[in-house]
Structure formats: structure tokens, C-alpha cells
Length: 270
Image (tube, rainbow, N blue to C red; front, top):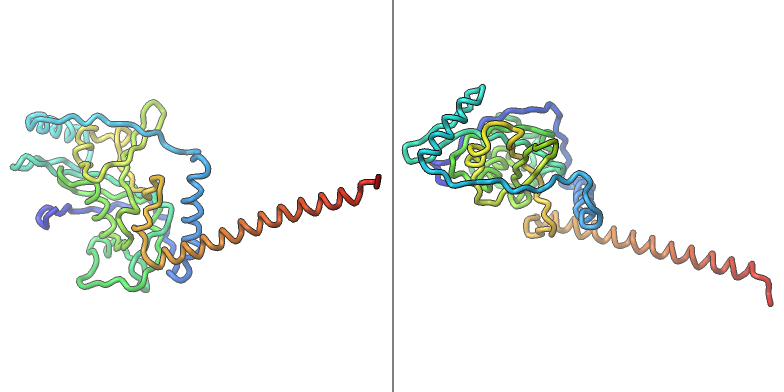
């Protein structure tokens, strides 16, 4: 996406929950929580897992796009209109809700990035040497002004830049969510899918379609997406878990051996 095509962003908070900070040196517990929760997903089923669904995404002619945009603009009660460009593309707004459970990494500073900092973006020549773990506000909502050709991966990268998040974008995924007949359906977007096109096809209703940014929990762990300090922390956590499992196994067999010996001593001779 060229510089001239970079999407603009308008941020709207839907929650006043304050953010929490912890230093990189004190983040073992957070990483341990992530590692344990991440590996536990493979051992037991998720209770509140949304059902996947495939949306219909037909190819539209230019005349159909123009008609869809007119119908979309007629249904909204705000100024978040879609606009058709001379080159046949169109611009509009998508709303993204953040559903992040784990902290994100930001450059270490004396204070957390404010909303104004997020709008300004990172300063020139900024180099990340130290990181701070930062909880983004729970259920925060952003309205993003994007192009019809803006891809899902670009939306994720732009959101991370706005909040100075230095984590690998592959740790995150953009999902589309819908409510139908009392059921919630969720599908992870492919990197090259175009969220604004999906918004136009579904209409402005949030129940018909909304976008959610979540951790990219997709089966196997993508270890390449983690930094060296994170990987070293994971190794320490893995060693602690292994030692704890060994201790529990030894304790179990020691207890069984003791009970068997007590039973043998209690048995009458002959």
C-alpha cells in the first residue's frame, strides 16, 4: 500500500477500562500465563468457541458497486459514508473491536502511549531496545477509514503502528463476526481479503458483520513470531513445567509404593 494510499484512522474508545503495565523483566508471569494457556488449548476443548461460517462474496460489476454504495449510505445514521472514487475504487469506514487477552509489547517509556500518541504514530528514528508489556483497553473499538483494496494484513499492521505495538503482526488475526438466529459465527480473514468490500456486501449492520482483532491462535505455535527474550522465557517456563510434572509423577509413585508396602506389612504371615 503506497504512501498516497495509506488509510486514515479515527479512534473511538468504547471502554474506560484502564491499561496495566509490567516491565519486561517482570513479565515472566504474563509469559507463563500465555504459554500455559496456549499449550492447554491442545489438551482440552474450548467451551465458548464460535462456529465458523463462510460468507458469500460475489464479484460485483461497477454499476452494482455504485448501487450498493447508495443503498449502504441510505441505511446509516452517521457521517461514516462510503465514497466512490474516479478510478473505480471506493473508501469507507470499518469498525474493529479489540479482543486481546494477553499484553502487547511497546517501547519502554515512562508512561503508556495515549490516544494522541497513537494518532501521531511512532517518532522518526525510533529504535526499540527495551520493551514494556502493556494491556490494551478491553473491548476498545476503532473506526478506520480505508480503501476498498486495503487488505486485512494491512489493517492489522496499521492498528499496531498506531498504538506503537512492536510485536510481530503474525501474532494477531482479523476476524469477521456475525449473529444469526441467536448464534454467533466467527471466521478468520485471509491476509489478502478486503474488509471494506466485505462491509459493503454485508451492509452497515453490526449484527450482520463486524470485525474483531484477536490473538492468532491457530493450532501450532509460530515460534518465529517471538523475540529472543520471549523465546528464552518460554524455555525457562518449559523447564519449570517439566520439573513440576516430574515431581508430581515421582510423588504419585512414591505414594503408591508406600501404600503397597503398608498393605504388605499388614498382611498376616502364612
